[in-house]
Length: 383
Image (cartoon, rainbow, N blue to C red):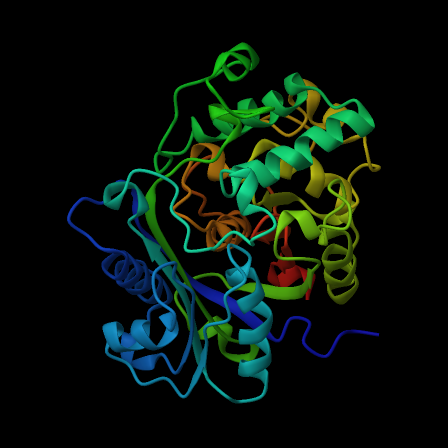
């Protein structure tokens, strides 16, 4: 039996702005530029927006600030912040709001000038008192712990982690929007400066500026817009903890449950998906998510990514734009996983465009492997 919200909304506009470095622009400028680009892509105006979904890293009430900055008075807003997974989560809440008639045009948007403002990873999160005495580097220390545990428990190697970074750079080398495009090798990754053992510099995401936005409408009016619609077939979320010390198992993320429910809602299986866009803040993320989303057994992720399987020409295309490791990572990445998934379905990818993409998966991660949200997007042929 079909889920009540399957295919009820569609992405009709995509936009990015300020990718890499955007000197002279603040986060709100970049957010607004990406929103304008997405609306223009859809053939709509700012005045058409009556549903706003926004998370930012520098304001406690970002959706209200965004509405004011954009000069709109939306009748439905959602500013739920679950870290980088927020934007994938908005696909579900926007679809529900559209279906219920709470809004007609939903704008999801984000912007950050993290690179030009500070040049380093900045977080507003406070360490809990039971972690702070150990002086972890947030968030990399938490991901390093997960990587160390995976290596200890399953024999995963630094070489296998390096293969993730090499694959991301190979995709980015074809993408003019990517911040880093020079090729790298496994040896380059292994020789890079150690940041938090076992994660070296090239195992860690970029720190860039950038913004992204997308526009959704109800499916029954999706074809009225300028671009080929991309339908939201499934979306599901699950969270297990906030701080890494409370994660039930360092080797298992909530993607196991969010993926299972997103696939069920969409009525598809992992093998049906043509392309995956996964939140790659660190190389270990890809290994964990491939396991938890059902692409290989637990503990086999390291061997799975070896020998170019997820690189251009491999059997499973992952992060075809270069991901957070090589394209962009302006504090939160989730919206860019959706944008690239939709581009691949539309046939408008800025980098390598794959042939015959009808189904794409976008996966968001928030906190320190804390919040996981999986979305399945499809072409008209999948309805």
